Picture 1: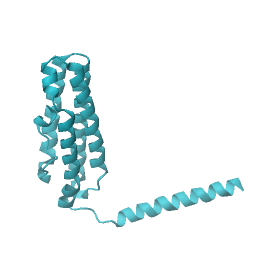
Picture 2: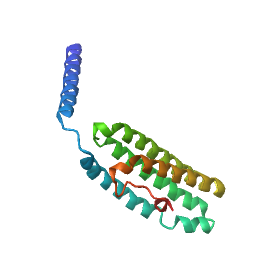
Picture 3: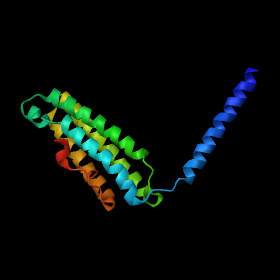
Picture 4: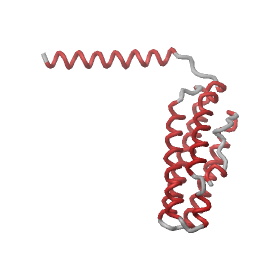
Length: 163
């Protein structure tokens, strides 16, 4: 009886997966404009959240409160990473997929570099933090260069977002 029940559950699971895959194939791929309309609000939410998280971080660095500023950058990196995961999950136009994959790669590098800024500040290493911030800005520029064709309003990264 147990083997029959296990087999039945396995067959049911495979059927559900196949049905879901077939349904996903039937769904029309979004246009570039539809994709931008779905992704830009995610970026706007993250921009607003990181503005709140990083508020006063520069002043804390200037005042020598590096660990506190580092914690802010660490939280900002985590929030940015969460947004990147949400963006990656959005269905994309097949013709833009290679460009978007490249963009996702740069966004992940930005997230990593923001985390390194936070780590360096927590360690009290202001020079290393500046270097990592420059790397984050360069990765942001590279991401923007790849994604400029989409005409994003909020997904266009600016250095001022991470101050």
